[in-house]
Image (cartoon, rainbow over all chains, first blue to last red; front, side, top):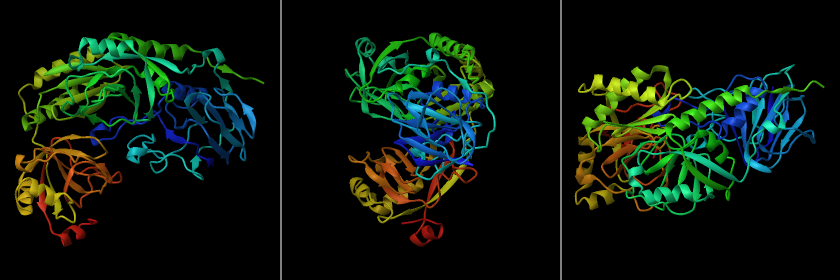
Length: 312
Length: 225
């Protein structure tokens, strides 16, 4: 009982909410680049939070169901069809054995999440099913999806047909403002350089992936080239010698020696990761208090947002 | 000691500014203290040479409470030393056929290959940090005479088990990967095995010694050339 991969698309990865507590042996977090869309996917499917789904980057995934179940596609706008019939995203949809599920190339944003009722049944490694290709860990044999992979899942006979109202869905634009907690290494960046960083637009470079988003724009000068290697938290913004900032994301290395100008808010990293090369990024400073409040407000906002039920 | 807000769910604790066994011991004891005082609010810890990155759950606690608890617990441990870590002996086949840069490194240091081997295997190294790749342990400090800068052009492929030097650090590559360190030998022990318990033969704070072995012993221990 599974969804079978007929075409894997450009980069499709099994992800749960990520691997925690394993930095000590050098393992990074993995997990969904856009947790907002990922969490909605599981919530709509009435799954346990963090159930394993497929993160589809850029699109091109074609699956065949060998079981009767329910699916849901959230995140980037990627035209969804079941047996060639166009279907809505952000909605729980029934599929039957033999059905073909196709997810076309992204029209807005670039990361979508395809979930299944009760989640995909994948053996966890180091406490998580999150795939980190660089580490060859998680998912199926630590790799992205390939033709003929079987994504095991249960037969599910009934599920409420929940959906998220259109005006409640996130909009993915080509321009994102990323809030940044100015870092403890600020002393290595002059006031002028800090102002430069916060007052110019940056462009997402071709070198953007699950490890980090490299940006291009006015170079930021730092008065040191490197620091004694230390732990790197999610969202840390490194400035290497060329002055072009890198926002480090889910698959980042756990330690490194480049100076950091600050740390991006995770809520905004989710939208950053929906940008493709050429997308525009602005940075805005936020205090640690402000960041903490923003996290809790976003959490309470999502909890209160109603899910609708299709009754036809 | 300096404690900073590093991000929405992270704090950086500095316990010194350089690399030394004393600072490493302080990092280790601070790690134990932080684990004890934060309990379930703690999500992960990244110890390194002179710092400890502390990652907590911002939905169950907040930065002010975390900072307060860390400061209190560090006041209590101040002055106490962590245990000395386990001693781990790793066998190494030092030879140009297993370490492509061994001869160049010897030339650079104006000494014989045997002298390089005896200096490298004569030292005791502390595991300062684990990162870069799963199971990659940074060991220090290598004798100054055989310290060597990273290669100008990193290799596309460094084999699993490669024993290498960069500046005053040494390491055993846990898996085949790109790398720019100077290769001097090969270790048949797996530094990272997802199937094994524990997955790594060393952890941060342990003391490592290298024991020279010959080709046949290396192969008998499962090494591959």
